[in-house]
Length: 303
Ligand SMILES: [Zn+2]
Ligand SMILES: [Zn+2]
Image (tube, rainbow, N blue to C red):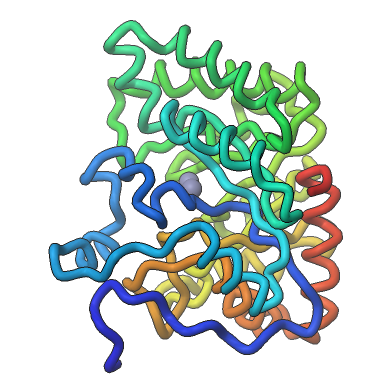
């Protein structure tokens, strides 16, 4: 590929029906906030971080690219306190109809805050922030057993349970980050009682786990990693998802779809993921987009 390192992939051909990107991190994409910590970056993104990288695009650039590719709605997720503050402020001032927001303490952030004695106060602030204008989502919360070891699990679960409570009390959608913790995510949700609208963001389970989620009426949101070569179990899960529970997202700047894997992404690349998802499910692209659009409206609660 002749693209410069760190450069955004080109805008794909527009989709035949608009879709929503239900999970993106504009704070990271624009450089307004750094990722949680260097070690939280997926290896494919780390490779792009160097001094020669071009200046990062702003929110307007990401919005215009998204509108040009048919990604006419997006959900900005701030997943630690400063990002959640940034998100609440951004979406409160954005009446373009493109963006709504969500906030939470990421499961990898919870043990750090707990160790510093700051978890309770941070949760109270999240509770206030998600009550703001155009804030629709409590997330991403959940469990991450990949980045956090055994010692961090109690704090992750405490934080997860607190977010479930906030989502239920405020009537908001709950977006879940589940990394190598499928059984415990279901255990906690079953035990605490799930909110009406639960979304497994960046779904990472297999077909059996998709069936468990479907039985509970949980939405499953698929990102660009469905295009990765080693993701066959994920593609099998995608084939099993009932029509009414399917969502699309980018998790940008991460998980940029093939053939741009490793480059920073943006919501506009949901267009590539939608095409890949239609191919995997053997569906007509327009029908899949139409369904993902309506599911996003129901799951997120309007823009
Ligand atoms: Zn996540
Ligand atoms: Zn995310």
